[in-house]
Each structure stands twice: as C-alpha cells, then as structure tokens.
View (cartoon, rainbow, N blue to C red):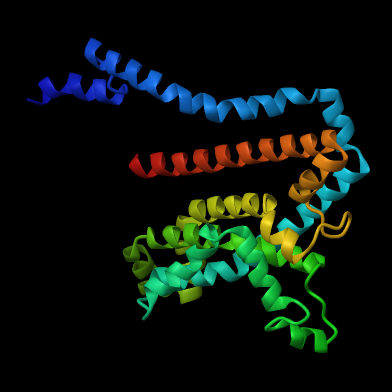
Length: 284
C-alpha cells in the first residue's frame, strides 16, 4: 500500500503536476491569476523604470533626501527599541498567564493595526497635545511632545509595536513548556530559564517581529503628519518627504519611494526566509 501511495506523494510534493490533468488545471489557475499578478507588478515596475540610476544616486546625496533618511533611521531605531523593551514582557505575559479580559487585551493590541492612521494621529494629538488628556500636564512641566521628533517616535511606536507584540506572543507560545520545566528542575532561576531556554527558542519569531515593526515604523505616514507635522529637518520622515515632494521636487520623491520599496522588499524576503528556515529546521 505504501509503495502505491509513494508516486502520489511525490507528485503532491512536486506541486500537483504529476499528471496531464493536473498540469492543465495548474495552467488554468495561472491564467486566472495573471491579471492580479500583473496588477500588483506593473506599479512596482513603473516606479523602478521612472528614475535612472544616475539620478537616483544624485538625489540620495541631496540635502532633502539625506535629512529625511537620517531622521527616519533615527526615529525608527528609537521606536523599535521601545517596542522591544515594552512589548517583550507584554507578549510573555499574554503567552504564559491566563488573564481575565484576555480577549479585550488581545483586541486592544490588534487595534492599531486596523485603525486608520489618521484616527491614530488624532488620538495621539488629543492625548499628548498641548491641551490633550496627558499633554496639559506635560505642558505644565514645560515638556512639548506634539510636532516634535518625540511625536514622530510615538506615532511610529503606536502603529508598529503591535507587530512585534503579536509575533513575540506567537514565539513564546510555541516554546515547549517541558523544556522550561526541566531547566527549572535543574536549578535555573526564572530569569535563567527565560534567557537560556525561552529566548533562544523564540528568537526567530522575536527577530521577525522586530524587523516587521521597524519596516512598519519606517513607512508610517498618516499618524505622523497629524501628530508631528511635516517640518523638513525636524519631523519630516521619508514618507512625508515623498508626500511633499510630489508638489515641490518629483525626482526626490521618486528616489525616496524607490528606496522604501527596496527596503520593504528586502524586509519581506528576510522575514519569509527566516520563518521558512525555522519551519524547515523544526520539521527536520
């Protein structure tokens, strides 16, 4: 029986192309999928071919692009560090403890990922603005948040941190409890179990979540422009520079758009490769 099923299994592993009928079905599916694939591909190609490599390099060295890139790199690095620092214990708590209102907490974490960015920006402004819920007390202490680089970081953190928390939660939940218990029985402290057992096993998910969080923060636009404004050299990140560039300098906007496209593509490849490698390792 196993010998009879072997060719079928091999055909399935090859993508279901073992018979002429399967090949015809695959061809029909490919033809039906072609319009959507072309729809996704054409704008990307149009963006790439619009700017020559010489113009691209020249614009990257320009003052406007350099300011936007450096500010984006600085603020996203801070946002990522804050997301990891605050998101790791939260993800571990949700993965290891049964809390009352768990569904509400989980929904609260998911909310920024589906909330329109403009709504997030208004909420942040009403919370941390000069007359906001918390901003009024910060203003009394001579601390300004809105329309500063701190506002850029908070906007990025609000919309991007949930990506890290959800990925870290899944990573911690996938760790075998028996391994942690065995380490504890051998005398390891809770912190030692976390550092030497839980963290290494959950590391691929944590790293993948961190990369996705950074990429999401890098592309943040809506909440930032409302809460932090669009001031060149102060709060103008790459997406904001692209927005204003369509009115003032199209080539600079296209250069930054291509750079963000390349970064996004590279990030997705990195995360997919990491998750694929991790899954293949576990399967082996």
